[in-house]
Length: 124
Image (cartoon, rainbow, N blue to C red; front, top):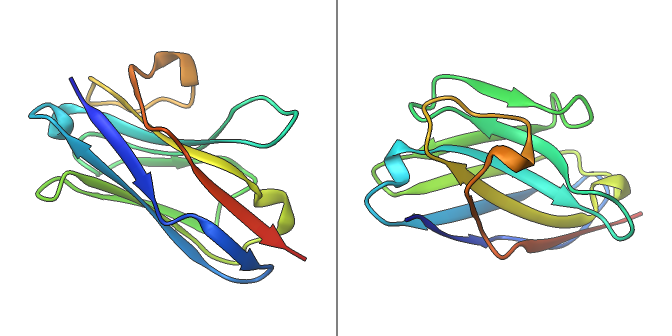
């Protein structure tokens, strides 16, 4: 089992930055590839970024590439999402997710564990 708790969301002006954290508990956290997804009101949940179990491989949605950076610290059981140059279109609830695999995925249906989400609001 992996329990996930996100933090770091909030209200920021366009062009600003936020750093989301996802703290995992359970001995299997370091065995899990991790992902960040987001869901805006009235829209489907969409892939944002993912990172392999080792941290050696990352992937990003085209809409955030060059602005967001995913990283993890397995010693702290934590995965991060550094978000820079935020735009109003980034406004959404952000969720972290884990899957018991070495390889991450862009598909939300392949993840077994989810956090409760943290709200990010970018004002123009």
